Length: 114
Image (cartoon, rainbow, N blue to C red; front, top):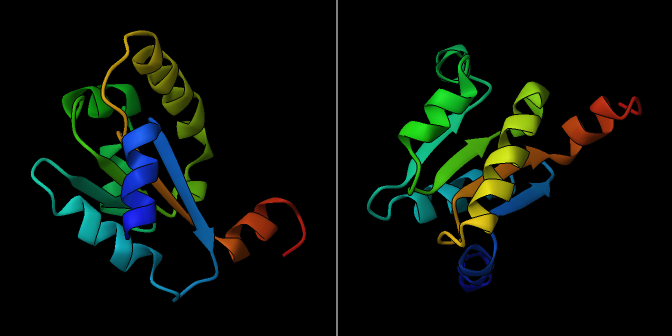
């Protein structure tokens, strides 16, 4: 966990990608327990619906760590995240705003190799 915390201290967004069932979500939820942390499981329709207005949702959690599990299931969110991350860098806001999780199987699937 110290490596992940160090990465979050230096970057606006950190990605954890790997095989299913290796502990990515468990690790991320442990980090998100810090005050203000917030997590969404994007395999859940309820959580995906919260991001139907991605910009507005992320604005409500502006200075919090937001964990997006299985983020690769919502590729339409990437442009919103890119803009928000770039804006935060320009304003020199605190790092560690987004922790993005994805499975290697889903990466292969989206690349057409699944």
